Image 1 (cartoon, rainbow, N blue to C red):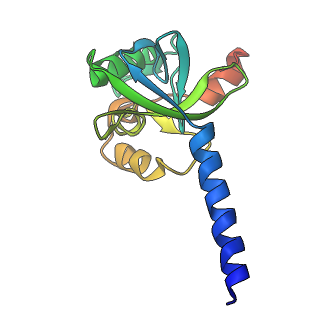
Image 2: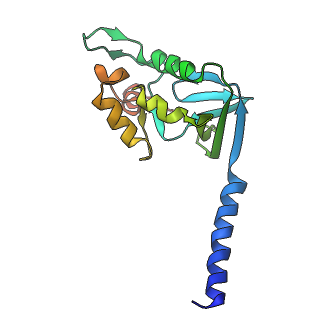
Image 3: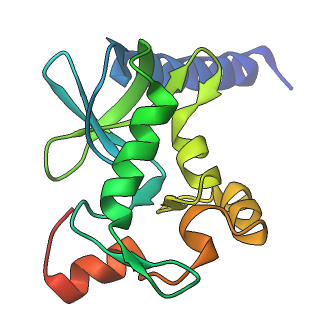
Length: 162
């Protein structure tokens, strides 16, 4: 390869990498729980990217067919994972509701992934958490132990936007 081609490839790589760094936004602090996949940090609304959790008013069924408020349970699980600890979120863009789409962490603990592993959120619009979802389903974690409607289907039936 000639030097000019190497220079062009390096320039393109650097430009894309720089654009990613410039466009990403960092949020740090204590989170206020909105629901199972939405939080607020320092007046910034954040939607946990790659997952979809039950809606706050959504109900599911336990394995004994008893109805329970899985949407409220999902928010409670998120609050338990975070446990008032400061969290760190990295976002790249906003959704149509002007919330930052972010991956959030406590240290190295991926909060988004843990919501899926606990069985109160699902991999959504990404394959990043598909293996975690398969694992949760396999061990019947959370809602997987009973019956439910996926949140995106529940929203359609109830004509609610996310």
